Length: 431
Image (cartoon, rainbow, N blue to C red; front, side, top):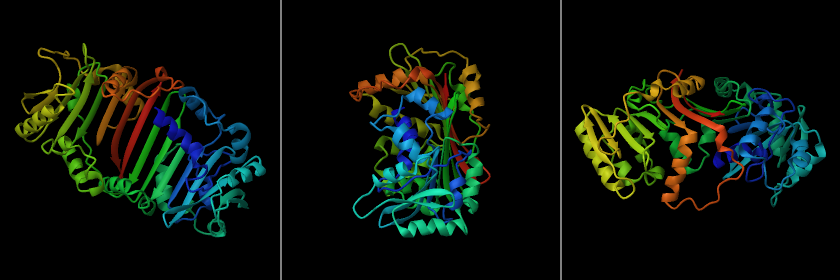
């Protein structure tokens, strides 16, 4: 949750300037996707981000209620808000010698405070100034960047770029924050992130949007082209017992592991016991149930070769025995890795028939076929994760005093494919 709050704050505030010191932008009137400023951004821009910067908006009121007010000793209301206006927009034009060259386009209510804010990001020979172009206040650190905006305003812009328009139309009404990166822009990412993009099929563009309202937080990400995994209709979810706290459906995880291992930058990140799970093709599901002393964890797979899968999972159980005692069971073509005690019976009712589960998937608009699916009851899952963290000696940090965990309900996340693009969506309900 701290990570989520940090991401939300970064989109609205941290995007004012990138680490090297680049201006961000704001629109006086927020649009559904924040694309107004894109009409002054060169069509060749590597990336574009737009975020709600009005802390009095309904979305920010929800964020403030859930995660607490923005801190850091910054007087946002008096010093930042007048400089930015209602929306922050940032465009990365290019990368020179590893340094992103970016501009901000804003509509401030106080030009003097915008100039003062821009000056705070001066570094060495980089000096940020503000110029009025096409009805916007543009923040940049060079005459070249200002000229790029002027030229775009009278010619081809990002708003006219077919990839950008397609990305924004697919995101729909992502009013709180949106982000877009072209394939060229993605190639400017650090090595590990570039490797992850290759694992995802090297899409032509990627885009993401965040929506916030009184009922839920929703994140949606889309990627165009690339190699999209085949969608399937989860069948093993029917085997997940009623009342499960967590359930994750997946298929052909071995193919994903193969792609990851083909990337030198990622290969070392895979634990050796996971890298050895070569026989887990087919559909699988991981679920968590409330237990007497410990939660009951079960991994169920339906591979083409159940015997080989059972051997692979027994090896995994042997490596995990010091942390959690696990054993392998065979039920026809299905193989289970579980810590359920002998004689444990969760009953015949299924999670897919639970009304909270059905309501959560319906609210998240989960299609019949997905590339993976995850469901969690946050209220019941959180204490289990905290207990596991304490067992591993990772609960030494002081918990957040502002996060109101009791206001979160269920999490649904899934992947899907449609019209040559792949998508990731996550929805967290607010109680």
